[in-house]
Length: 205
Image 1 (cartoon, helix red, strand yellow):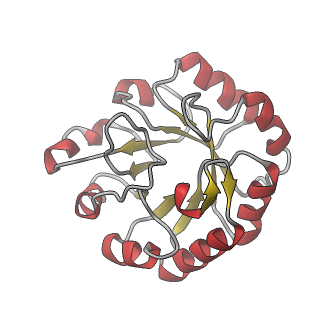
Image 2 (tube, helix red, strand yellow):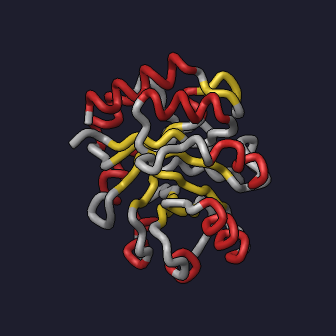
Image 3 (cartoon, one colour):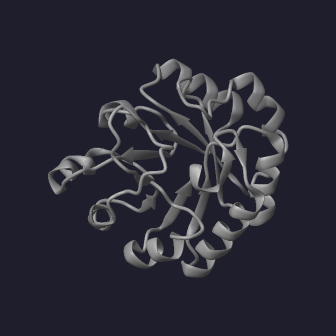
């Protein structure tokens, strides 16, 4: 089975349609107001109707009020919730919807307790002080391999067309997640980079 590819930080219809055309499996939309890729729920309405049912829609939240998560997930019928902050297992497990929990381990002891998350995937990202993803910094691939013992994983953190094959070969994740590595700017994807990334990820998986 080929590696799942999640294109994250989508902010407009054009990039979303390109990601679908090029073979993305999951599409990530960021509802964290402090993110440069923040998508207002009202703007998401222009995008949602264009997405086929076969493509997974992921809403990204960071330490959000639970009612906000419920409201957005229900209004847009999100397939997955992604919690990318400091959320506890109790917080994440309360929603009756599949979820992805982002983790940013620095050392092996940081993996202790992760089995309490009833997550569909653990998303292994780079640890950057005061940042919740989208930094372009490479994750710790050794620790990512250890996470595979706890749950299926999505590898994130500094992935791009140049290193994706090496990353998949080293970690053998269930899927990969990319945002900054295929962009012109934080709100605009680069079609050629996205095309190359997806092709290489699917070929290496």
